[in-house]
Length: 84
Image (cartoon, rainbow, N blue to C red):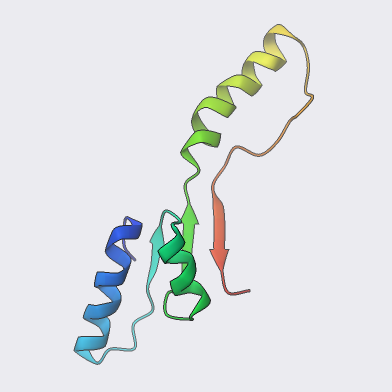
């Protein structure tokens, strides 16, 4: 597991050079990570969705508290990407 999308290709190179069968996953979803998942080289990625977890979460609290509205209520958590 890598702790950031930029490190995933390097980890995959290391696995290949070592002749290992290790499976690699990462945090953060980038176009390169999506490509690696699509190619079957990277197993999974967790998109941390900072905007949804930050601004949108506070905006939804404000809507509920001040406007007494749950309109537009949605998940503000991370997304998961894999080959399924």
